[in-house]
Image (cartoon, rainbow, N blue to C red; front, side, top):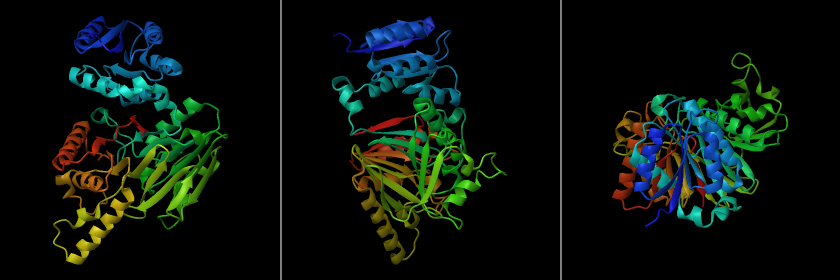
Length: 433
């Protein structure tokens, strides 16, 4: 049986290429080789492989340049690029995603993990009708730019899932909608400026609340420093001095050299009064979360499906489970939980605070954050199709997060449910439908 998929290996290390050729051919991949970037770009344009496995550090033409060249070629828009490197710097990883990489792996590479990753990246739908899947106006794309809670935690132990705080980009129905403005917003800003250059941008930022980890990226958001851009910031007041005062105060002279009112872009801050509103053709519902202060979650109804975002929330039933409180309190908690289940009913993608495992949660009851066991149960009851664990604890490294994902999947399996569970990961992109 002849191989049905092609992979291009670009690496200046002949031993690594030899190892990859042996491994991939054993698993029915047709393998092309290039010893440097320019040759790899030429082979990719000629043969259009499904996957390019490209080393980061090469003379003359490095992995960043290869990624950018491939992404500029329309005929290669469906080719998946995996950047490999012997370095563990988070800045390298983020730069690779910005340049157009789909994945980033550090050497030495684990063969089973690589094979699983390549199988996941290449789907039959992309091979049969790639143009429809990529260009249909019904497509909704969301990208994770910050997934951490409380405080940024960059470093070698958070390379896979990321260390930046809450920020998600949603592109749909002619809109670019940003959910929260944590430190991930800085990376998104760099990407938008690189992608659109001097083209005017009309952006909408939805804030869930104004705790630091949800607004601290705003001063470093490059698009607000270009006069041609517009940024509309929406959120609920949630504080004594109003939303605008909170956002401008973090950029006052004792803390930052440029005030928010002084940036060149047109920035409009609007306090929401209604729980239902629209951003262009996108219908938005807000729902109150169980978190200190005024905090909301959002559900976006797009032509490609619905997305719900609750980065900070402690399920009410978690607080009262086994607490010995009276029946009235338990009934009230159940009622509040039912409201959230109704709000989330049938959501295509749910991104929800799952900061603690079951044991950790016992020491953090009442802190306003979720336990993964209860979040999975909530998602199953609401008929959610895909759950992303979010607001990763600052003390959780990549291994711990992966452990929590496996635990969540076991819970789903134990209940014979069809819910898909993943952990939110910086740089990852999800497309609906």
